[in-house]
Length: 478
Image (cartoon, rainbow, N blue to C red; front, side, top):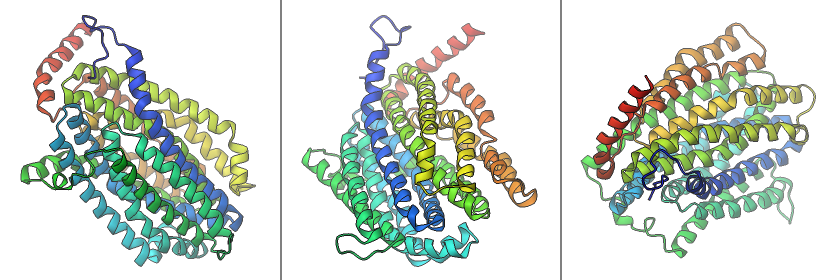
């Protein structure tokens, strides 16, 4: 099923089947994420005529959404770990049960953040910035967009199931419909076309909420029409017992801690940058949107690595999983480098169209330059961590990321921003000070093979032989 070696040719890795499998998962997911991120960029462009304050407020609201993303992504990652391995061993009960637990946990996060956005938007905005004018605009946006959060997370839970079982075209198609809906309604609601009132920033929030509903129902209808079984076996989703829950949370807990603590760390970074002058806040908002293009494109390959590696581990083809993982890290890093170069080649018209000029334009360019220099290493760390998780090791990458974030990176950011009062670009550079050190340690762990930790019976049965082979390989090199 996963084997990419010819019979009797275990020393030769066949690139053709590997790249075909990678493209089948990565390209649709990357396209889906790019559509979503492009819609966010167009949102910013359409809000830009309202002024830099509106752009800055929209960017800070997006950071609150990112914090929600960190809250549920731990369960998303845990769900992909279980579902992809059960998919590799064709255990239908495990797939359905894992989806049910993933859905419940993700929706709990969505309800909390939706309530905060709708009922306490002033508190949220006060955390992110001390600029009263930006807070006022942000409150208007959050009160409406909070209703979209539950629908967005519902769609992500369904996408987790579909991606893990290699049915990536359904969420991709839904994203196309959703993005087109969002763009059209932005034009109607922000500026008051077709007889609608001109709602400004509130119109952008309403368009996002309507698009979230369209996305959710489109995924559901397409899955039903295609006869996809796992999404509709509701009884199987909730057929748990204490042992199942314990196994799920043991694997999810490190990922959840990672995502939540990283989300809090990123919030601290955004709070620090939110205390900078207004032009820096506007530049940061635009940068985050452009960064989302890179991350959205990369996430397709990251999801593909999780599925391709997890599927092989679940099927007991551990050597193939190991060889796939090594190639995915360097292949994805090369893709990110190319994407960065392309983005910087066209940055001038994009930044200008997104209402940056003068000091804010210069700030945006500096942020892009810094990010371009460090993102290849940063994404290399990300892909390795996702690969380890899919193979069953949810601890190593989490421990490294949290230790270095809280012991090195955040102290550097806080000291540079609130004690030394360094320029914004120096504060921004401190956000990536830990990445090169972690990359070296992640590479050592990658080649050790110790991250292969199956949860299926097929995988567990193959583990002793795999570990013996890795030990022998290390001894030969020494």
